[in-house]
Length: 277
Ligand code: PAF
Image 1 (spheres, rainbow, N blue to C red):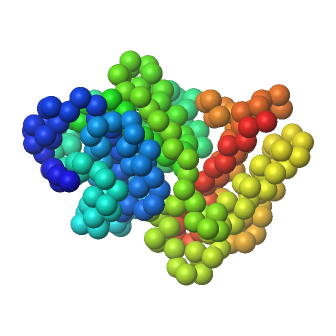
Image 2: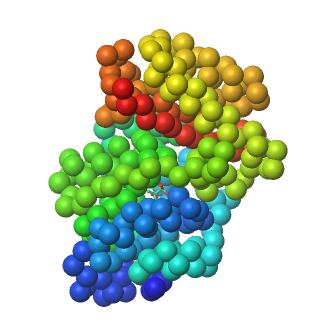
């Protein structure tokens, strides 16, 4: 496996490759990322993982500085998973000058849910992903559904800009107790780690209620938020939405997703579950 830090070396390495799959990451890899590599494997001859902690998508109160940088163990995991190239540029490579051109995702998608609590986040994500696409020029890219809104933003970006890239969504990988794997789980204390499944349980309960026929989504959302907060969480949102664009769902909608974001101590966790009626 080649570990490459500059765009020119990357171009040289990929020149002869006819079908490249990209798995963009911010590093600190866990089984969820490795699953993305596995999904990429049958779809391309050359698997590239990028590792770059993108300052542009972090808000002033976010965890950019404390976000774990773990390049060596990440490379070991990627090599073991059969990755061919790791592209790990530094900030000067990705942003050699201030990034004054940006990608502004659809307002109705970027300003809701995560976007409401992290203004500018999806502009930062879309901008860096477009740059990574231009640097790597993949035919396929894989994104986890754990970041459901991010997946939709990037899927729509590729469609609207006619980028010749297949975007493949990957199911969320969970620990045995149901907790969605996330680099941010590493911030949890042992006690918080036990408590952390409450968010998944809350979403699971809503999914069960909807499968059982409940259609008062606002009531389900209110109850879940209140239960989390009563257990000491600080909930940003629990929302039942349409899968296609995350707009509010009518009771007739058959493709739903319930999404939640809540803070446990100093760690903000997000999760979601699709509901197909
Ligand atoms: O999902 C992530 O890790 C990041 O948002 C991404 C897609 C690598 C862009 O920085």
